[in-house]
Length: 154
Picture (cartoon, rainbow, N blue to C red):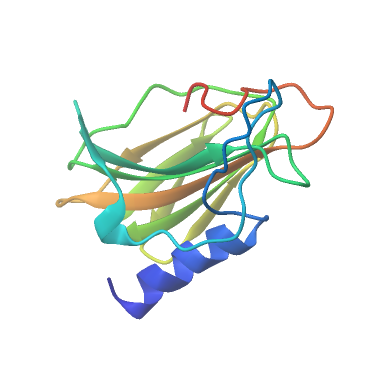
């Protein structure tokens, strides 16, 4: 992993109190605590359009849900159809060129770009380049706002 990739990961980790989940044996959701997630330790899930590496998906001291993962998609493909959700989302383009569509308007996002999807905006992404493209996703749900619960849909 190069310095830029580490910077993207650290930025995502600093967005909230993040880390290893501790188990409590109660009905309360587990919280994340500070920690480091190495690229080599992330399980790889093959998908129809490429692959996905889940990093974490849990509550923290300040948000109801903090979820991050890394998606790699093959040339000309999309990871999923355009959609909307009440929570907000940041996408950090790691490599390749992503075409992000926000409320029907397409935007090119080359490596190093940051994409923000506001609450309930219709959005989607596809790989607009010739090779693989990958990006880090950071989603959160603020206290009292409706959205997926930790461990829910990605």
